[in-house]
Length: 602
Image 1 (cartoon, rainbow, N blue to C red):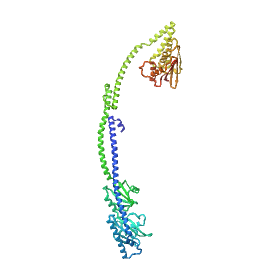
Image 2 (cartoon, rainbow, N blue to C red):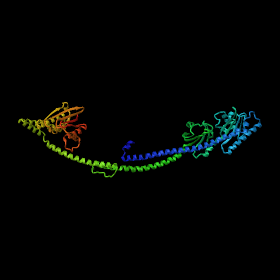
Image 3 (cartoon, rainbow, N blue to C red):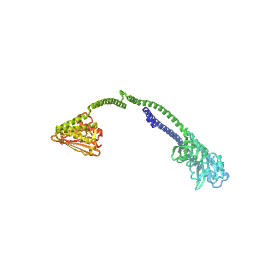
Image 4 (cartoon, rainbow, N blue to C red):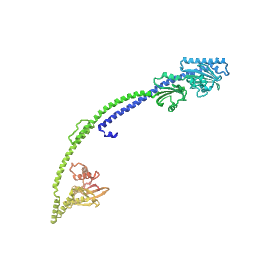
């Protein structure tokens, strides 16, 4: 993928980069907004359902507390206390009289609860009279000779776990008392036991009973239209209310994850997603402070997804529209950005076709203007260089012709000088003979078949011949000394490495002093460098002039004709060997000058 992008045209690259640069943030923002909308829908669902649950809990708890409070009317009524406190076996007439009084009391309290609209789901009252082993039911009659183990509310009254708490149990009727098939007993009731004791002896157990469907029916009245399954569980995870009547009074089974999450419900309100029977559910719960019951609504995730799906469809349409808009903007921008480059590429193709009369005329104020100017300058410079190169070739050809004309047998010069030397010997003019001999050897080395690089030994011989000629000219005024070991003589150096420096020392130093001049020429190795030193006792150089001289020889331009020989030598060395090599000059006015030539030892 990267290679395809890398090999794509610049126009395509611009298009891709701009398109991604605009579309990617848009998609990211859209995704974030979609996720936030999804969370907002989830949060709104949770808040609405939680509000309904809290409202239901508040009213249900209030009603249950009022019913429990009104049961005090029963416990304190003489008809009730008279019936439950009898310790002897009641005669039939007395039994009917007392039990009828209790049932009248039950009816009275139930009518008050109904009249005051305290609890619509109120079912009944039971009282189990221990001494008589009898249950009085507000809905029917009384049951004698009870087997306590068959009656759930009596069994639960013996456990501290159920006292003072609401719980689910079987109703009292013929089937439950006689332990006949529980399916025939009818629906469950939600019961609250109140135990009446005399000292440590239980006189009676009063059971307050509420229809189990009361909770579900009440929630239906206040729910906000959000579909979901409603259920109520107690602290032991026993189901108190559920649409499936068969599971009421049983533990929730079939989903370990849900059981684990429910067991950890410790906040007053909460919500979470879980999966049950292959379907995602959104569970919202609230906990009653009075009963400790967990009121739960399970909303199918598909119901929420329908709203989220509408939101997703909306965002998809918006992003699609934006994508097409971005596509158009990207095409426009890529053309705007590529057009100046296209003009440059077109001009370069003309250069490739050897058309040098091209010039980009485009008045701009951006970076492309600098590129165009650079291109135009480059073309102008290229034309100039081609012209100069053409002229140089012509001049070089002319120089070659002139050189051929001038090199009409160089032996003619040497033979002529040799003839003059022989005549001087015959005439016994030794100075002329010596001068001609030195001049002949000087030019043999100077010309040296056109070679520029010679051994240090040859460069020294050339300087010696030059000094011989100059010493004759100055009538023996110059004395010189060479201190260069034979080991150094084998190194390769430029042919004229010493002669221009020696010449400069004679004409600008020794010639201007009174008396004889002395030249010391010596060489030394310093690591991998060869240092050649020319030292004279001439007039020296003043400080200001020395600084000017040093600047002059370092200047790469040759516009100034002063110090041409030294400058030329210094620049040749630097060009050939690098900036670390060249000439350095030290001088004291009136004392002399020392020039050090630094070369690589090769």
